[in-house]
Length: 129
Image (cartoon, rainbow, N blue to C red; front, side, top):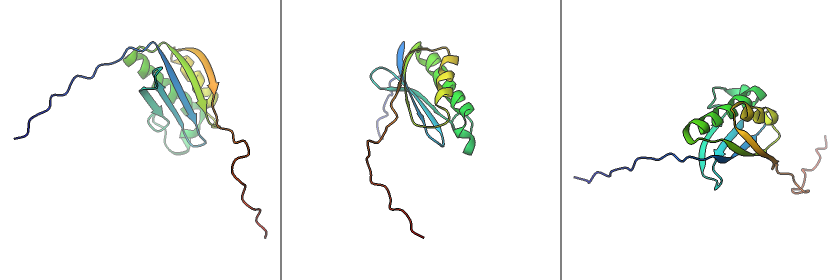
């Protein structure tokens, strides 16, 4: 008979300040809440917030997604202040930030970390018909 392993009870961290990373793609919006070291506390996407298909890409879905992620972080971990890093060109960029404000979290700073190519990859050749 194999010995049974006793699992330790999972403790919840109390985090007053955190990092909110928003990825706004053309098809969806991802919101990840982490502590200052980068350890993920909570997350939410358009699909986990109840939107499916093309409705995931709407600004309203982005707002609800960020509200869900931050309300979870507030209740479970006591998040009060956040630094926001936003990436992507999706329709939900500004609305996701409004959702953070609606959730009652103080914003310390907003950084746009959208990757911009400095003439990176070579373009495809032009089709000749």
